[in-house]
Image 1 (cartoon, one colour):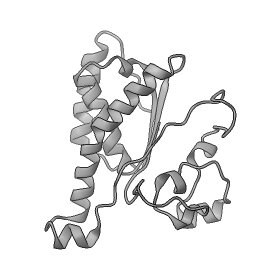
Image 2: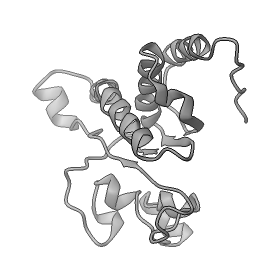
Image 3: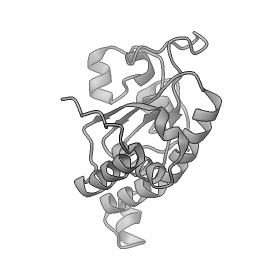
Length: 183
């Protein structure tokens, strides 16, 4: 499951050039190798491709659930219309998006039953992921036992929420031991 970070809007128009859209499905969740310098400059790395997934292999090498969420609250509208901090509103969006991610992971676990579910997220996407896993642990959702690796790149999650998640996971696994983080 792929979860992007800040400043994306899945409602934006999909365009042939990933750099021309803030839709995460266009910009990040594609299978095109655009070259390292272009990907770095334009933030357009094709996550599924770089994670070793193939576009037309029928899921043999893995299945990418590209989870898109609105993480672009609008600088001017946040300040002028709602008198809110742009970044604080984006964090609110992330927390509000945790439940839809839980629902997507539950559906994925019901549909794909023969492999673990790994999660790959970046930046503000870590807030969505950590909150979603904390919700799943609180409610003892069975798909939680299917979660494999959780890879967080440049995570923006606060340690308090991560500690809540860890305590809930400890309760969920009981006598089984939680794996330790790497790196």
